[in-house]
Structures are given as C-alpha cells and as structure tokens.
Image 1 (cartoon, rainbow, N blue to C red):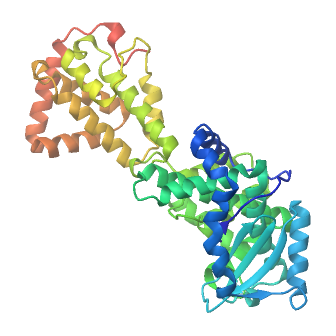
Image 2: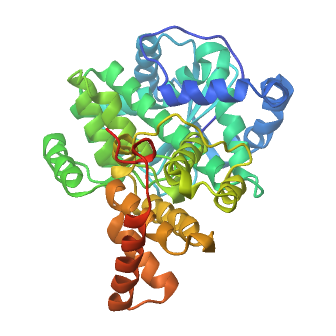
Image 3: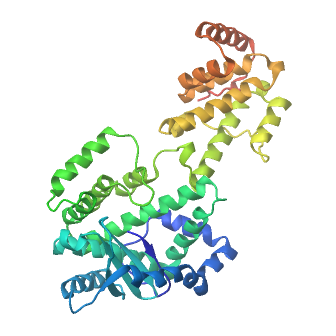
Length: 415
C-alpha cells in the first residue's frame, strides 16, 4: 500500500501518530534548512510530477456512476476519519498482485487497486481496505502535514546511495509504524478487528474465505516461538498486524510496549536506526567507564584508546551500575554482545606493561555482564588458543589480578 502526497489542512481526531513518528519529526525539524526545503510546495510538486504523468496511462479510472457502492464506502470512511478527501478510484492495468495504494495530491486521494481485489473482498472488507488507504491521507494531513514532510525527507535520504544504514533503518521503521497507524484507522471505521484481519489475510493469500479467529491463533503461535519482530521493509507481517489489531481492540495496556518490541526489535548492531545508533554509543561509553574504573587500568595507554573510541571521553567518578548495564544488554542481539566482547578484547591487549591483568579483569566484566561464553570464544579465536592453552592463560592472569591491590571504591562489584 504505497503513498505519495502534497498539501492541505490538518484534521483532528482521536487517532494519533506513534511516538516514533513524533520523535523523528522533531529530530528533522531541528535541521531547519533541510526541513524548510522539503516543506516547500514546489519541492512536493516536483517529487510527484512523474507519478501524475503516468497514473492515467497505467490505470482504468472507476467513475462514481458505475461504481457507486465503492464510492459510498469511501464516503463513509471519510466521514468517520473526519477527512475532506476527494476520493478517486482506479484499477491498475495488467496487474496480478493483490494490493492497493494511495497517492495524495492536495485534497485528492487517488486510490489504485491491483489484481482482483474488487472481486475478492466483500463490502465490509473493502471498507476496511479503503479506510486503511484513507488513513494515509489522515496521517499525512495531521499537524500541518509535518508527518508527510518527515516521510518524504527520510525516504529521500534512505534512497541516496551515500546514506548510512542507520538512515535506511530509520525510514523502514517509520514506514512500518505508519502501516500500523493505518490499520488502526481501519479498526476505527469498521469497529471489528476480525474483519480487518480477514481483509489482510485475503490480500496475502488470495483466498476467498478466511477465518480471522483461526489466523489469530496461528499468529499467537508464531509469536510464542520466535524471538524477533518484523523483518519486512515497508509492511509488518500480517501475523504482527493481526496481534496489534487484537490488542488495540481490547484496549490492552501493554499495546505500545508490545508493538515497539515487534517493530523496532532488540538492540542489534546490524539494524541500528539513528536513535539506536545513539543508544549504542552510550552503551559503549558506559562499558569504557567500567573498564577504566580501577585506577590501575586507567593508564595513559588505556585512556588513549578510550579517546580513539570517543574524542570527548572523560573518566568520571560517577558510577555506571554494572547490574543496570548487564540488564540493559541482556535482551540485545548477539551482534551487540559480540561487539562488546571485541571492545573488551581491545582493552585487554592495549597496554603491554599491565601484562595479562586486563585479560583477567575484562573476563570478570564479561562474566558479570553475562557475555562470558561469547568472550571466551572470541579470545580463543583471535589469539588462536586451544581450550587447554586458554585455560592456562586465564588462570595465570587471574592469579596476577588477585595480587593487584584494588581499592573498594574502584570495584565494579560495589553495591
């Protein structure tokens, strides 16, 4: 369900963007020159010009006189969503994939059906589909079109081959949340989550008959057996959308927390958006503080390595609570835990004058943090040690560490 847009006014309704949308909007508004450029009407028109040229060439326009029922359903959706859209419906030429998409040009909502959608869905399911598409209109018009501007801005950045992966992930998450917003719009219009789910599953499968309750049981089974959220780029999987619809219909108090886990997932080095990138930097800084907490570890060589990680790094007296740190990374992906292990290994080897004591100390840190097994495998791999040789090295290092007079205030195990 794709979308493009330009301008109009902002309706008010009890259907609001997700916190992620607001956070990203606020982030980009701080970059005033870029924001102002994307907010220009001329920029919007330029970006949709090609679409306007090709729309009529590749579709059959459905007029109101011959498809009155469809338009009446769309009118009902507009009324419930409190939007002033002028809806125009089309059937895409030579299409087989079941889908629908909307393009928003001023107050015009151009909705294009693909494949045999018109024959597959009953009236209530079609109303759900139209409500979903028209919720894109609502989303884009909210707050003086600031969420539309945000969407075009982040998508444009993500499509630039010079952009880093964090921007691509940010655009991806923004789109995923937008689809859940539009599903919520469908629910608001239909007042029946099962009908919305039937619509979603029919579009996924092409089946003319589906059972929403049966699919919900399947969705619950999937989520009970997987430890990750969506892997899709633009639309969450139907089982995720179905669970989200169920939770919302039941006014589940854990809805937003659960949805965040399903859409954003756990901290993962390979899937950092711009916000989690900042979070990962903070995690790294906190680990460095734990590493240099003992005075004997804070040599000029070790602190120089800290400076290579962060130019503004300063060893502080403020405690980073190791228990809190461990809890924070407990649910993170293995990519994060492996990265932290390599940071520990960096510091275990940097100052040769400390001999093997840093290896023993970082091993203790790894154990308390809960990444000991991963760290030991990485040490053996990078130092090319057998299990026996590694054990001998670690035992010797631990013996040296025991001789080191560490004061109570330096201890990472301080209560």
